Amino acid sequence: MNEKMSVRDRRYWLGILAGAAGGTVAIGAMEFFAMRNAMPVMAVPFATSIVLVLGSPEVEAAQPRALIGGHLIATLIGLMVVKLAGPEPWAAAVAVGLSMIAMHATRTFHPPAGIDPLLIVINNAPWSFLLVPVAAGAVLLAVFAYAWHLAVRRFDWPTRWW
Image 1 (cartoon, rainbow, N blue to C red):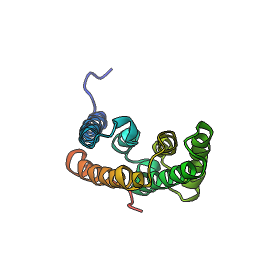
Image 2 (cartoon, helix red, strand yellow; image 1 turned 135 degrees about the vertical axis):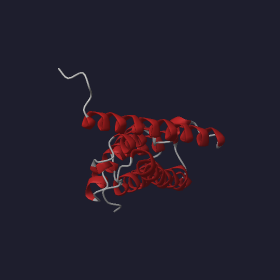
Image 3 (tube, helix red, strand yellow; image 1 turned 180 degrees about the vertical axis):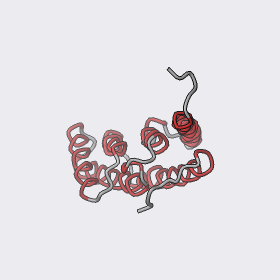
Image 4 (cartoon, rainbow, N blue to C red; image 1 turned 30 degrees about the vertical axis):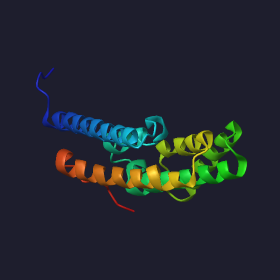
């Protein structure tokens, strides 16, 4: 067995390490802003999005359309459901299911956004949650991922913007 790692293997592992470092920086920034705005980090729905966008940037669900659109659509559905039905456990479940349908229908399926309606309904979030943290956070994550992949990974992300 060859003791030396091939160039391809090195590139692969360097990509993984760069993605993990980016994830560390992005999660740290998310926690910083959450603490600064007195919002529990558990209420900010981006941890799994960060892992997906920085760890598997080539998949469809990690592209900006899915990242931003999925979070916006899932949040909007969660807000509509909580305003109509209240912060009930069954309403949270319905909101997640409706969000899955809507994300598929709009070609914005982003699995990490599935937590948005659950958080929104359970916490009876206000309409402003759509703008901050969701819209602002999703756009900032896309901008960060673009810059990180370009500068650190030397990886052309996204494969398409929309």
